[in-house]
Length: 118
Image 1 (cartoon, rainbow, N blue to C red):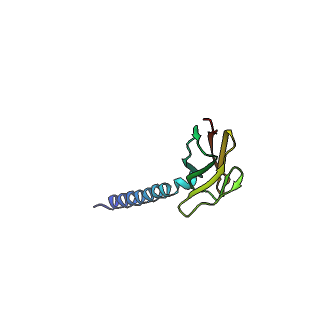
Image 2 (cartoon, rainbow, N blue to C red):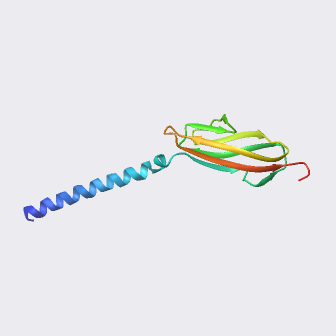
């Protein structure tokens, strides 16, 4: 190989290596960059509750403050939560909010109907 070809090969190798490092860093940090994420497993919005006591189940990722109806709730190490709420007769709105240290928020609203005659 000529000296020019060796320099070109070295520069190309370094460029590819740096590109791979940047791409890998992006893949590893994209969830953190996106902010918190709430997934509510139960109850589904629009459903009808048959009892006044309902358990809200789900998962929250990348959050340091989590509230349900304005009160703080706790999540386990895997981000899962299970909280019980007492519903009023008729139409109910449940609000779940997650906030990260950067101030980014995710909010989920669950609408339920509870009634004895329903």
